[in-house]
Length: 178
View (cartoon, helix red, strand yellow):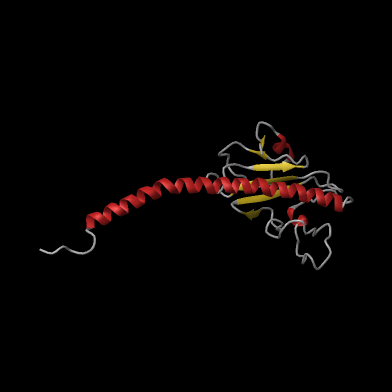
């Protein structure tokens, strides 16, 4: 009797089972790595917002801090062609400086609030994951002291901008150590 060419059904099932076991081990690690990367990007973006606010208040001292994200962004202005203004400072990109209350970017919603006075005396920028445990692990916030703060792991995401009082509350947020 001659030997058959190819693989038997048992051999193929064993190979598929091994591939599934390897995938089951690797996928959770990939998800954790993606969450960690999104968290790091959120912290970096909040640092960018702090720098942008410092530049804004220096450039437009009569306005104070920018009252919202759209004022820091292009806000309909073609940056590089038209001169920046207090309502279109061109300090951040149009994705982060969107006109909505929440600006989605990289698995997080970014928001900003400020006191409604002129000149604007303060601001609080916050970042919340689209879904805690899937796109990010916690909420982040910062205000005019430029300290990035984080909520405890697994804190539910919020949909409205964080307040200055909550961001400074040590029972709700702790400073990011990096």
